Amino acid sequence: MKKTLHLFILIIIYLLCGARNCSEGDLKDGNEKNLITASKDSLKKVIEIDIPDTELLKTHEQMAKQKLLDFADYMKIVSDTTLDTRFRQQAADMARKLFISGKIAFRKWDTFNKSSKNCTLNQLLAKNLKEGSSHYIQFEGIDIVKPLSQTNDSAYIGRLSVYRIILSFDKQLDRRNSSEKIFVDFHLQKKAKSFGKDRVKVWEVYLGEIN
Image (cartoon, rainbow, N blue to C red):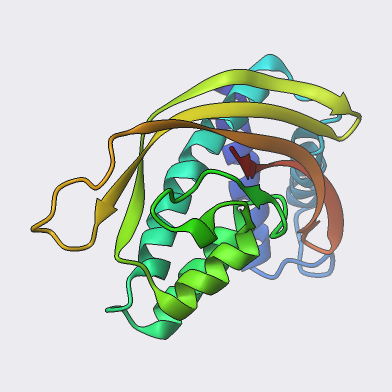
């Protein structure tokens, strides 16, 4: 909690400076200049963590859970042909960004649609954008079955379990399938991000294969 508050304060100071278009010539007060410089350096140190501690790993595990729920929401939009095509395309783009790659495998996604078995994320999104679907997926009871563990200097991997329920868009119909337990890999990787004029490496969590 203290780390989060510290990070929030540093970000506010840095953003306030950016909002005022501060430059070295504009800063009349040397103390203010030093504060902004120190805050920027401190923020970079907080963001650029070489090895995440237990608290940070647990935070990213919770973020992976949320991203899985977000994915189900995006896929519901993508699959609904009553919605505007541009809106569905935007949802597909957002869904793709949740995953480590568009080529990851979906071995257990939709048991009612044979073409959705053993497909890639890109193939699933393309098919549902083109054809839509009569049903959508809802997740319940997400658990962490394998906490994040380090695979190399810039990567961790974990696994979630979740109950998948298939629901019809037709509200008059009940659930089309009893809940089935599936497993979802998730990855924590270091990625280069823009930070003002600089590039910094930060830890980001992504979803992986669904089995």
